[in-house]
Image (cartoon, rainbow, N blue to C red):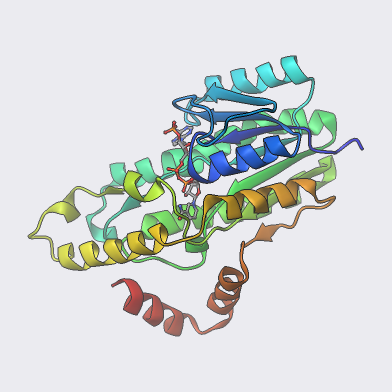
Amino acid sequence: MKDEVRVVLLTGGSSGIGAAAARLMCEAGMTVYAASRSGKAPEGFSGPGNMHPVVMDVNDEDAIKDVVGRIIEEQGRLDAVVCNAGNGIAGPIEETSIEEVETQFRTTFYGVVKTIDACLPVFREQKHGRVITISSVAAVAPLPYQGFYSAVKAAVLNLTKALAIETRPFGIQCCSIMPGDVRTGFTAARKVVQKAQDESSPYHERTVRGIAAMSKDEQEGMEPEVIGRAVLRQLRRRRMKAEVTPTFIYSLLVWAIRRFPQSFVLRIIGKLYS
Ligand SMILES: NC(=O)c1ccc[n+]([C@@H]2O[C@H](COP(=O)([O-])OP(=O)(O)OC[C@H]3O[C@@H](n4cnc5c(N)ncnc54)[C@H](OP(=O)(O)O)[C@@H]3O)[C@@H](O)[C@H]2O)c1
């Protein structure tokens, strides 16, 4: 089958969701280029299989082009890209500096754009290719004290859907996966904005409480393999879905958030996290 997925580039492949997805894809017989800044093998991976850990910062356009070029040279094809690398910042919107907003968008949005941009010419030429982005339930559930994280994930979700329309004539498929809480290093890596760390901040107490509640939910959340399996499932489908929220409970949550009056939704989220 011409558009069978055999060779995949995955960003953020050294840990968490990316590592789980990389392991599962490799076990399924795919050749996986697992990219990260460290270039470490996906955690928990002990082979066998066609796993290629690569050093690639998604903010470095030249590095991305080099990796895509290397894949074509070595494999003669690239069937899918999974844009997973990302991070989070936390803090009240008023107290987040523009530099901190830019930091949130750098890897988690522009990094996705740069990675996709490097793959699209290959996909168009091949007349097939798949783009999977890892968004979040936070794309539809506006999280207080993670407002910019919610904004960046909403941006990733809508970008993926618009891309699906634009690239369909070229045989390219796009899907955005929206995980809920997942137990990974994401929680520990999250940075709190500078101003909110000051105890005299009017938001300080609520921010600390809100972040503690969200961190607890993440650390009690699902295993990254749940999301890894969702990625693999889409790569194996003949036609990928445009949007996937893994697990019944989170897909029900997303359904409810989109259908209930937004003032009611915001009150509930506020009770949980503010
Ligand atoms: N955990 C959750 O509850 C949750 C929920 C919804 C969505 N997500 C999303 O899932 C994705 C993966 O997160 P995770 O939970 O698996 O977190 P994680 O364990 O912290 O993994 C992040 C991965 O991204 C890589 N990375 C970070 N910056 C990078 C860069 N500039 N270039 C290339 N790679 C980079 C990291 O490796 P290096 O440090 O070696 O670069 C690591 O492999 C993120 O987009 C996150 O927003 C997570």
